[in-house]
Image (cartoon, rainbow, N blue to C red; front, side, top):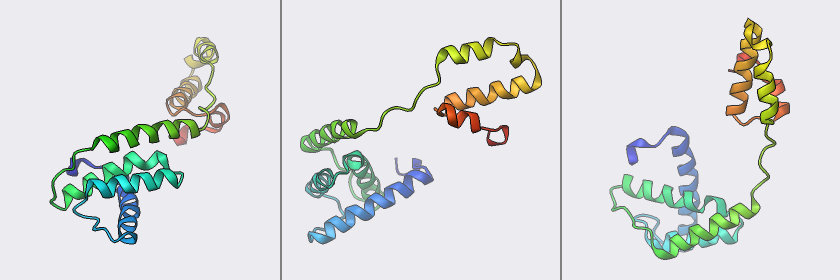
Amino acid sequence: MASAVETSTLRNYQSLIAHYESFCLSRGIAAFPATMKAVEDCSVALMYAGFPSIVANVWSAVCYFNERRGFERLQKSSVLRALHTKALKLSALKAQKMRDPIPVSAVRSYCASSRPQSETGAEAAALVIVGIRALLRCSELQKLKLKHV
């Protein structure tokens, strides 16, 4: 697990670990080797602070750095499982609306037109497909240029 972490994930984990370590320091708890009680308490504090969406990520970060420092992998407690379930529900309640989708009928009519047969049509079709895959809004799709692909 420790060697398979992407660079962006590692940066995110480092940010979360900094929060976890400051939480432990403020309470006089040793951050590592991580204890289940410290992780549970940090998770509860994050939920009360209004950050339920990162609770599961803190757990992943703590596990990663705990293993990386040579300590045993923690087993998730039933309390932490319940906290993660509650955090997921709270995150879903606060979630923003989904992005406005491009209507399938608009994509079908575009692809059925004669325009995609030309060179510029093929470029436009590629932009539409990339835009749809990237979940771009209609206004974002209109601004997409071939150099962005």
